[in-house]
Amino acid sequence: MRNSLKVARWEFKRNVKNKSFVISLLLTPVLFILFATLPTLLSGSSSDEETVNVSVSDPSGIWAEQIEPFVSSADLNWDTSVVTASPEEWEAGLEEDESAVYLALDEAALRDGQITYYTTEETPESFAGEVQLLAAPLQQLNLQNAGLSEEQMAAVTTGVQFNGQELGTEQAAADTGLDALSRIIPGAFAGLILFSIVMTGMMIFQSASQEKKEKVSEIVLSSLTPSDLMQGKIIGYFWLGMLQVGVWLLIAFPFVIWRFNDLPIMEYLFVPELALLIVIALIGYLLFAALFVGLGATIEDMSSTSNFQGLVMMLPFSPVILIGPVLSDPNGLAAQVGSYIPFTSPAVLIMRLSLLEEWPWVEIAIGMTILILSVWLFMKLAGKIFEVGILLYGKNASMGEMVKWIRS
Image 1 (cartoon, helix red, strand yellow):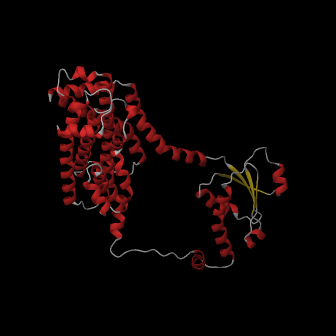
Image 2 (cartoon, rainbow, N blue to C red):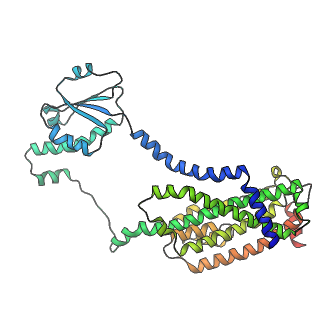
Image 3 (cartoon, helix red, strand yellow):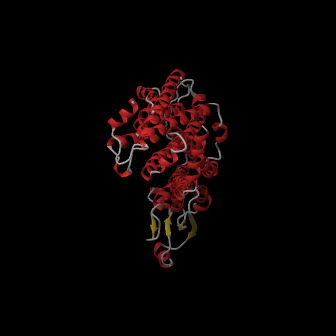
């Protein structure tokens, strides 16, 4: 173990000093934050349009007392003023490239419900939708002028809406959102750990292949065993993964607190269930790390990997095909089967436990047992493949050759 820790420290220091790793370490959370905030920023910039100068012709005198307060409460980007000019005179007084509207509220238009407004080329297209907001107060004014009482006006203007409610679910419906967040936040945190350390675990594959190609492993193996080297790589890249998670959280946490300041995120995050979710993520890392380190020792050239080796590299992404079935039915057959397959078990278990109110402890125990046994088995197999393959030069190992190494 002492030699393995030496290898782990060497792998950790070597990658931490690598410029590409440092850039990706800092740039990845920044890109996530940018993509999360960019739509909001764009929508905010689009809503920040030029103020529309609305000139209202109001011979009936209803604008100031009954309509303008409604416009102010609607927070429309209008600069309104009452004018006595005709549309032609108003147009003649416009400045070039002015965003303006002439709104005619004469008695005939109000009585017939056909109100005309005049725009310029610079008037934004959104004004056509905004002006429709005036229909409600103007309709209420017409009903009031017709002599209807407040109760009669309410009966005329209020529509009929049907609202379904299952018996005994009022309180449950009110608490559903908070309960879901209390499960999703720990699951998302564990998923982040799994994603990060598996991605850094894939670097083991490149490290083993590169050292084999450059024949560095011959020198290293002169002072320690292949088992020490393999274990050291797994531990070292695990440290890198945890460093990556820590840096990502330091960068993203202030943004999350600002964006969701009304949610008790820390209260939802540090719950007892989080420990089990993290354990599942760490066991998943050990499984894929064993695959990657053994596979990397069999490849002489990264550009000439076989179909089998490429298929193994895609195994961490296999849970993607189960996302739909698991989200639609966390207790369904696909979710249960995915919990028992070692390559999909970590991600599927984390997804299921983030969605379910009551955890299926029997299925969790079976899935965890299969996963732990699989890690032990793949560690043994990867050790045999690594021991022979790391010193085999000249070609990439075939599937048949790896089976012979395992049997020997």
